[in-house]
Each structure stands twice: as structure tokens, then as C-alpha cells.
Length: 236
Image (cartoon, rainbow, N blue to C red; front, top):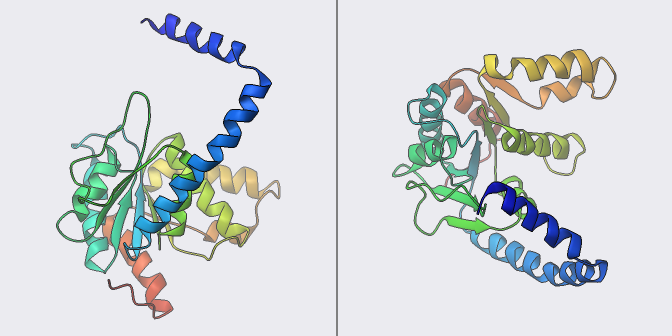
């Protein structure tokens, strides 16, 4: 089937769907969503303190940031945390790879039509599948003690924005957020400063919700310092 044929098929299916069918389907969907939440809560509650690593699925093994993500993950396990990723390739694979054999290596995979399968470095029993992005996002936020955000695309920005918004609005407690790669993030940070802050759309203190670093040591040190400050034990 060509791309044009597939687009026509999807268009026709949307056009033929009645409003009553939409309402009926949405009602039954509630049970699927509820089941996915319950399953996720039960599995994640057993894992213990973890740090989530986000970044592009498109970066390869020879990428500078792939290697750094793996190093960060290993160092995270050395201070007592497990590592959570999206379970797929690229930076996710690097995060699981660095944690694998050193600490818990968790993958929260999302079912997509043409991409993403579990990478080989997710620990057996810690590979959890999701159909809904929003359920998966809840698991990342609820069961993470920190976010390490490597270079990535829309999905990475989505996870970052979610965490910043929830902390900014006091919907969750503050936890450390580390952006890795000052050169990569500079354009976004300039926009935060020169547009959002200048227009009064964020406050000065909102720029303190994250730390920008350029190496694995500083990334992990920021997370460790955050929890050392409050004398919180993170050992399993």
C-alpha cells in the first residue's frame, strides 16, 4: 500500500465515523486507560528511586551525546539510583546501556506504528509497554527523582515542558532537572530569557528550575547535591 493509499484510507475512516460512534468508543476507552494506569502503578512502585534520561531516538552509538548519556547513566547507578528511559533506541538505549549491569535499567516503551521497540539493555521484567503517551508521562514524573534531558526533538521537549510546568505550578514537589549540552540548548534558553521572561510570561525564579551542564560529572553531581542537601537516602 502506498503512502497516498494509506492517507486516503485514514481520511475515509475519519469521514465515515459518526459522532455516536466516537462517544461510544471514548466511553469504553476509559477502561483501557484505567487498566494501563493500574498496571503501571503496580510495576513502578516496586522499582525504587530512579532518574529518567530523555533524548533523541535518532542519535547513533557513535554520537558524542550517546556516549555521554551512557556515562551519566552509569554514574547515576553509582550513587544509588536506577535509570528510567523510554526503552527505545538512541539516547534511550544509551541510558539503559550505562545502567545495565550496574543498577536497575527500566524502559517505558510506547507502542508506535512504525518505530520503537525495546532496546537490548532494559532489564528483564522492567520493560513496560504503554499505548497512551499521557499515561507513560505520568509514570515518568511520578516515579522519577530527577530528569536528565539530553538533546532531542519534540518528544524530549514535551517531557521537559511537562516537568517544568508541574513544578512551576506546585502540582508536584521540586526535583532536579539537568539539561545536557549548553550549545544545543542555548537557542531555547535565549528564548526563555529574551522572550518569555521579557514579556512577563515566566518569572525570574522559573529559570532556576533546571541546571545546564556539559559533562557527566556535573550532571550527576547536581542530582546528588540536591538530595544530599535534604539528607535523603536513595539506596534500594
